[in-house]
Image (cartoon, rainbow, N blue to C red; front, side, top):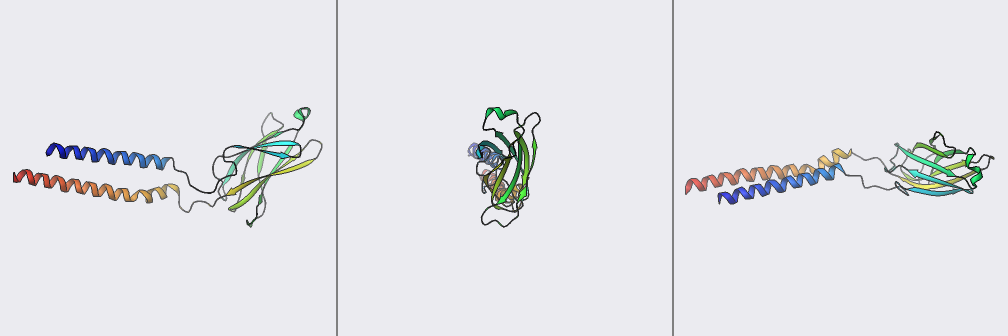
Length: 195
């Protein structure tokens, strides 16, 4: 019986350790489950007039009042315009049901390129938005295109605090297991003393 009790304690300890590792790995890789971008982390191909606009948005979920990064490349209609200097302006336009004013983004031309920009934009209100990319060609013609984006509200509490609150019952379970282990050991000692 003594050896069986030791095996039971070892199995219990192993199970609790494995459960703790699973909980920690889930907490480390957790991401909020909220609304998403139209194309999260992927490239969107849009048309502005005859030119193709490639947009890559930040892989993170855009939250209200937080900046998120974007990369924009314009592919000219004709290969002969490859050396021409294009201009780009980015703005966030509120969608239907979103009460807000348009917001301008910051874009900077990538060094050595006449058709690529990177920058960021902050959207102050959650809801449906459209990212408007306005492309100005070298001849002065301007074309715009929109990419729909859904912006989520910031988390009510920090993610780490949520996991601490959520995993707090596990501490109670561990305390209960420790108490039961102590009671079981005491009963085993009493049985050994009685026999």
